[in-house]
Length: 108
Length: 115
Image (cartoon, rainbow over all chains, first blue to last red; front, side):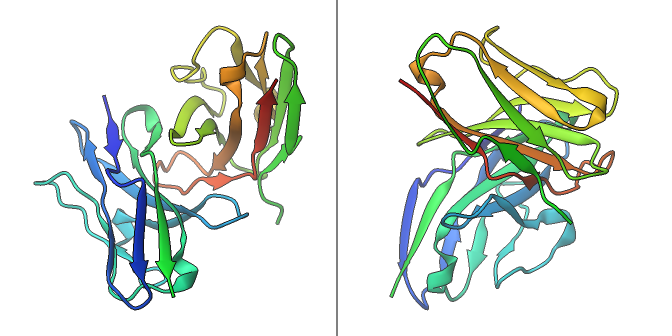
């Protein structure tokens, strides 16, 4: 079975501070991992995926197979980063499994 | 082009009634997903359609839930004899497949309230 765990339901940081949203997964095969974001009153959308090894809006995420983690990081948080963030995994049968989400609030 | 469209955006129904939720995916997207978003519960997978293959129904919570996808495009999610615990936002998403790394494009969801 595949499972995604986001241990923090709520996370608050001050503007300019570093931010890390934690994501751990369990999956027996080789996973494909994603971060999705939902800004207030907007639809859920893809932020980044591990296979692209990209930085989007200053965010990066590295897949650590040893720790089965895919934490999302940004060195300097901005107020517009306030949103709900979901970590997701594609495993067997192409089913995309989401974590329970972390609500990030960036304080001025 | 147009994104994923869901209707209605809001639905209030009485307990015991049946409801139908509609999803229009992005044209050309062969994969279609339904998820349920509940407060504090994250996104719960319900069902997945891929082309002409048999759908993956493993996430449907009970036999009161069913879904169809006609002509490989529009999908309807039906909930029979609704219960209060069915209250949630129902999200539809589509993606280009067979590349499973294709991102999902979500609709705005249907907020279902069962009174």
